[in-house]
Amino acid sequence: MFKFFRNLTSAAILTVGLTGCVGSAGVSTWEYQAGPGYETERVHDSRIQADTSQGFTREACTTVSRRQIGPSGGMADRDVTACASN
Image 1 (cartoon, rainbow, N blue to C red):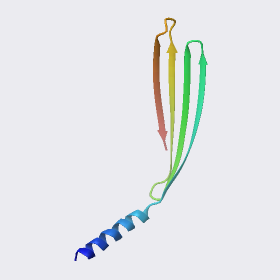
Image 2 (image 1 turned 45 degrees about the horizontal axis):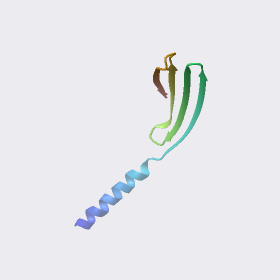
Image 3 (image 1 turned 180 degrees about the vertical axis):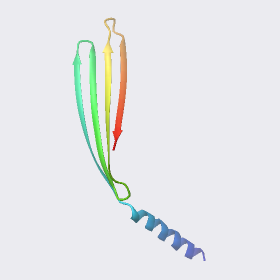
Image 4 (image 1 turned 30 degrees about the horizontal axis):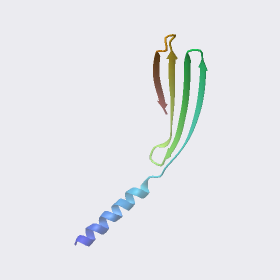
């Protein structure tokens, strides 16, 4: 009886595992600027995913990191991330 349930469980896991297929690809770009008293870094990430249950989806995120250096040497950092999905 135990062998029957073990085989049934294995078949159920295999069936669930084969029902969906997911693939994805991503692209990332990076920009850097610096000048007197500041540095700015901008990273763009974009990912496309193909899923048999949802079709194609896309997510794009941009992260901007800024560092300002004051005349007395003090620093202020700020990171902002924004994402959009379709």
